[in-house]
Amino acid sequence: MMICRRLSFALLLSLCAPLWAAQKVDLDYHVRFLPESDQAEVSLTLEKGERVLSLAFDLGDKGDYSDFSADGEWIQESPQRGVWQPGQGVAKLSYRVRISQPRGDNRFDARMTEDWALLRGDHLVPSAQLRQEDKTELVARLQFELPKGWRGVETGWPRIGKNRFRIDNPQRKFDRPTGWILAGKIGTRRAKLGETDVTIAAPIGEGMRRMDILTLLTFVWREAQAVFPRDPAKLLIVGAGDPMWRGGLSASNSYYMHADRPLFSENGTSSLVHELVHVFSRIRARDRSDWITEGLAEYYAIELVRRAGGLSEERYQKVREQQVKWSKSVKSLRGNNVSGAVTARAVLLLQELDREIRQQTKGSTEPRSLDDVTRGLMRLDKASTKDFIEISENVMGGPSSVLASKLLR
Image (tube, rainbow, N blue to C red; front, side, top):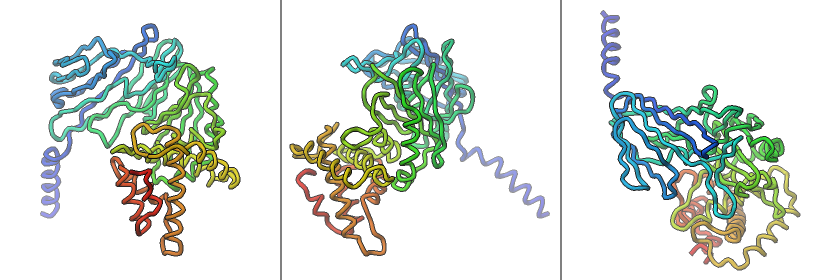
């Protein structure tokens, strides 16, 4: 009798499970690069189109997207906005997108040549507002079709087959292939650092110092892990030479560095470590508080190297002297898209705050530092100057004289 009751209970559970379990629907992206036209042909295929009510895409104002074709209905509401209402069953949306993105100064944010393509996946598949049936979970995969002679492709997502990747971002309902992508005749270096699979990739002949980059990352990795309690499953670093933009730019799982950027600048900081901090921390700012994200990234670009033994105390003080001179004219840290001088002044303030926190909590059962403030900021979706002050003073256990500065008004 007991066995029968258990079997009946198990049967009841199996019958009821679909009532609360999400229905998984495959979403397959297919990308075919077309170097001759500086475009890519992109398609999105839904296994069960009826589960998705609509996808409203933000197409931007550059006219990069064209040749839309859809199963169901494609509604071009304006040049900047298009809405896909998928049909029943297997439904497909396809279009073309221009790859190269000039900056206006004879530089490029993204570029495709006959031998390679370097771009952001965010541009391949634009952001979209998703409306779907309740209890629907999209399972996204990305497949590339490469031109003849192109050797391979790298993304910041886990590889699940030849030129195929799994896209899974728990923070989004609509998983799309965000982050940097490099395809073509490329060279790579790989390593396992902590729990993270790290890949350094660049087109062959572009002068990217892959082994130098990997060595520096290995040098500072443990110090970065000690500050940021986060182990990304994968990290991709890509780069190329001129005429690509001569800087660095991070995404959640990858970042770009120009091939000519030094591992350490003459001012004692490292763009490579700066962007690594952005990837690890994922701190974003609001309310004219970009000084927080850029200041912390630059602060740790110096501090992590110092803690790893790569910066002597004498050299550290010279770096501070340079920052004092550079930021002498700065009257306020508040604003969007902060300048290099503002960032330098933010670093000085953060160094002063770190000393203040250490002094105030010295001898307590739990000595604190700026690292504790940083970890608190990582829990926020976006941080304001007010948030920063509140977290800092909570960590310190009282008001901060450093943060009473006019710079933060």
